[in-house]
Image 1 (cartoon, rainbow, N blue to C red):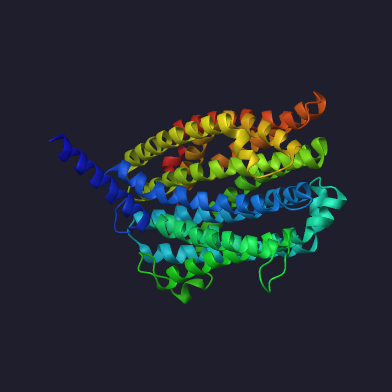
Image 2 (spheres, rainbow, N blue to C red; image 1 turned 90 degrees about the vertical axis):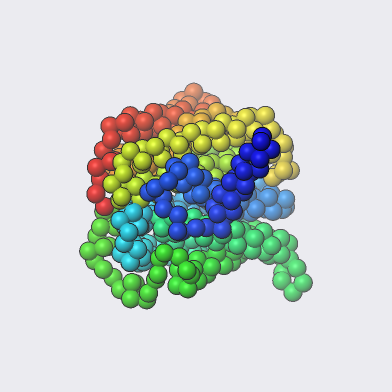
Length: 474
């Protein structure tokens, strides 16, 4: 009897995992088991975000073993910090697309959902094109402005040019995945990043160290490999948008500008973009503050710790994305109670995940950091940064779910306000005072991060309980 129950349970778990990895748009997220709905969405979303975080880690690993590795690590880190502005636009538009597509799918209107997704691509393309051109022209000046020494900027500005110049590819990767998530097909989003990362992992050593007729490009090779890898992922996405068998059927006519739909999307996306730009600018300021108070080694140590932290946090963000899709679709189906239960279930899973990661980084931080750099001074700073920042992981996990709840409901102004006060009026001043006034240097910046993130989570809980998100129309 017991053996039969165990086999039945194993069979159910195996079937659910297979369904999640394979992708199943026939599953109705507005009915049935909420736990199963969260798992079906969360597994591919977690794996998707793990793949996104692998991009930076792969680059970090290979360039961390180059000559002048402190310059190379700093360049990769500072460029990623600047790219967070592009990520902000991409995520903001992606979030708006997810909210609108999910709401229309919940209302059983896939044609309007598909049209909305294509209009989001038009808007993001126009914005990113301007940023991309400016980034290519002023790459060296950007690195110096971020706190890099003139020597480090000279060493790495071509890497920055290529990475910012490929912003359109980054935007499409995020945005199209947001469209798939809104439709409930998180598996396609996951697979596109798997493909992109496999290409990046193969191409990185080839373009960095050289292979056959391909010369060794060094640091620049990392940018070439990453751009080619991401481009491959985008081609995979486009194939499934136009020729796939999913619920969204795309036609060329959907790319004709629909100004009413664009206006509706911008209304949601504008505060969403601002929301992430606020956070990104805060991280940029912190990176600059660490570079000016800790020098090239301090900056490299912080960037190493940040990349490792993002490797763990992005999967948690992926899990929390399940809340956005479930909230959007269930609000569209007028099932508010089910939307709330979805939030609590997702938050519980995220807390368990982040608590586990916190223990791993606290206990094994030194060994993890050693894998990415040979520089002892960089290692010391990176371990300190990683262990201090990881203290707030549980609060990060709760906060992510609540932020995605607001965004999935289309209530993008609430998290924008929370981010403005939490990052600009609290985190930045706190980091500056600790680093400069109390002469704590980079350590003061490290301490300010978990303190501010905890405050942001507490504010998110307060506004979640007020319930404005339940009444938003999109």
